[in-house]
Amino acid sequence: MSVYLDYNASSKVRPQAIEAALKALKMGGNASSIHGPGRAARAMIEDARGAVADLVGAIPGQVTFTSGGTEANNLAIMSAKASGIERLIVLSTEHESIIATAQASGLQVLSWPVDGLGLADLDWLQAILADGTPSMACLAMANSETGVIQPIGAVTALTGPAGAWLHVDAVQTVGKLAIDFQSMGADTLALSGHKVGGPQGSGALVASGRINLVRIQHGGGHERGRRAGTENLSGIVGFAAAARASQPNVLAHQALWRDAAAERLKAAGAVVMGEGAPRLPQTLFIAMPGFGSELQVMSLDLAGYAVSAGAACSAGKVTGSAVIKAMGREDLANFTLRISGGWDTTEADWQGFAEVWVQAYARVARRVA
Image (cartoon, rainbow, N blue to C red; front, side):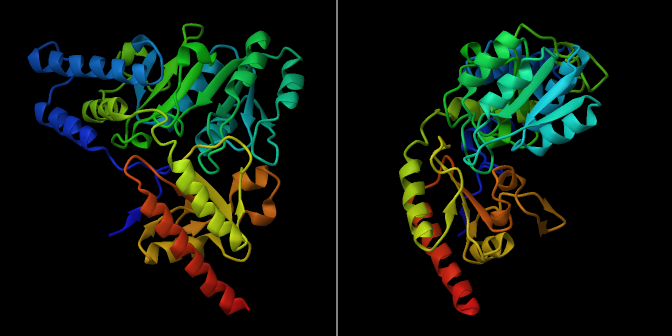
């Protein structure tokens, strides 16, 4: 049986989410219809809105359901542009859905540097914001590859006084760490259902009362006019069921399992990226010079372990990690591997992975010796 250690790509769907989604699929009904089935569908969506809001410490009315984290990021950035923002400040290690949307926005885009651990350069941000240009700063609360957690409080201490819009991509963080949107100080927060154990194709953008969302998908008045299109009922209620089943910080114990595995890999010469910075407890991102990313993934897959190169894949071709390049280690960009556990990962899964990886690397080392 395959061992799944690629939760940062997509979580296994939780049993509670499957049950809820199936119930919605069997019920039918359009939430915009005023007959009985329509009203029942609407009630399920509003109940789900409350559950997702509770997960991140938000108010239900602040939650707009989307097709996922990518759409949520798009909606935030384009709403900022419509509000009069003139400049986008994008962390250099950001997800492509933020980088590509920023580049397509027509606005000035500045690449916000990180240090060797992948942490945002706060001095650079403070200097940039000092000129008073209406700006939006975008950063992931936790990086999808390294798992490095950004100091959101320190960032808001700079963006707030400067009047800058702060957009936080919490796709990788939700359900893993506690989030309190009300006290965070961010203006918008992107979420994804399938990263927390819900179905793929569901997500949300949480927005504070300080800003207005301007829809990028036109049509009917769905989602309070913020996002046109018939709601994905099964995806939304599945997302909500996963949110209810999630217990932030419940994965904290995996840090011990991850670190034990990391020590075995480091003994063979692997470099742990982001080590020394706060990281998600179930995420390990390593680089092994001479052991290519694609070969690592294939070797582990053949041994029954599903992991990721931690880099973009196009037509089956693995490219070097842009995150590692931004961290100043371009020399390691083609030798990375990401291992990420989830809600049903065991200590034996981490131990087995480490054993298989060490064996695979030993075979490679013998061939090049």
